Image (cartoon, one colour):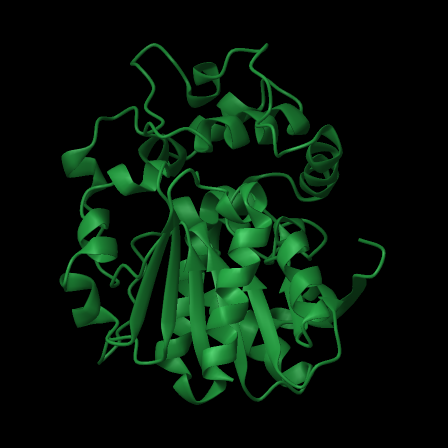
Length: 312
């Protein structure tokens, strides 16, 4: 971990974005985190790619971790991530990169490849396949206690999270999202109540890891994490073409709770997936959960490196 260097680079709105970087290779890979993740969630992949001759970078989104918060957090959007990414690539003189996204970080990875295909060599996503932009239908097919619907409601998650310290919130979400069941609370429960206080951390997630996450979210809080993604799903992108035309690889854990989201199976196993991403490969790690890159880092690293080798 000491080999990973840290610096700040200007994004949009003159914000300072925290960038972690390792490696000096000609080919660069930019990692896009999900929630409750942060740059640190890519530690295993960044070191492995640098050792294989790549330049690996990950940044905390605005309002996450060590990056500056947006000027108006309640108005933050997905487009902010796309614009910050474009600024970063220009500032770091990176004309063409691979993008690797996890969880909701998959959306900016795919959208950036549609908006700027000349800058993207390929896309790898973990935990979520390409979902073409459009209205969210979760409120029609999933119960009110579904975690995305709860966290979308202004003030609901703030009150729920506010009962605990930051480390406990991160701990509980890691435990919840490591299960194969959808996190759904009863009417008289909050999402944090779905985890008993004595539930152990997943075996691959250490107390040191939790402390690292806790320190970063202690700095930023959860305000922007709740706005983007959960309160911004309705953003309209006005794309004339929604097909992802760059090479793409999806890595899914076979026990990932996301597979129980309506429509996700079609986008990972069905022919429908190829309609949206013609040059697509999909790989399952049978025992993997939603945090497959931390749970099985060596296997994920090999899959990513094989993909990069094909398209470099």
